[in-house]
Image 1: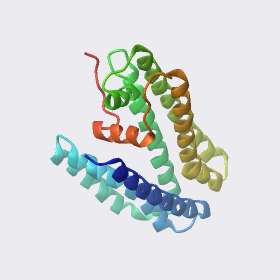
Image 2: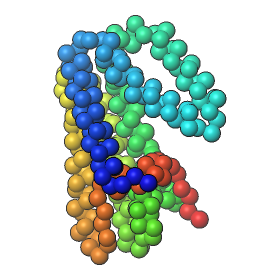
Image 3: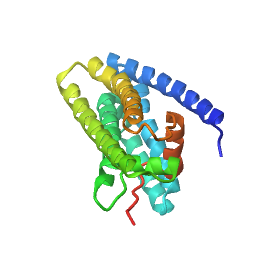
Length: 219
């Protein structure tokens, strides 16, 4: 099991890489140039994640076959994708936040355990009734946040200059996620004063350990 210092180091490295990726993406998108770089930045992360998911899936051969077909399609239409890479980036961003919203929202039905409750249970083992209610409310808040973010991304893309949309998609969304984390952390300490509270790193570790977005059903 990784220690807190190892998790912190990995988080810092991931943050630096994410910042570098964000800067390159914004520069290429805002300027509307560097089509090859822009297309690679838009497609490569999604392709890598899809490959990892396909490799880890129960039906690995089917998943890898689907990934290979997608890769061949990208290669075949590379010229068009390079010319319209801003649209590809829009699809990437809208896809990420809509899927995150779906991951949270689908756990809110009566026969399922809300996603934030799942994460809290991995951290604490058991939760009192007030904490169960609170984590359900937090799951609702994240679901709404990702839904609003998705709609805002689409609206700005259609109504604002590309550089404004790119700034929001690249830096604004990340800033809002961090802000919501900070607000939730403060609210949790006020609403649940008698509960032992953990930091963001422990929460992220619990999410990764349990498989983020997994659906758990109530027994």
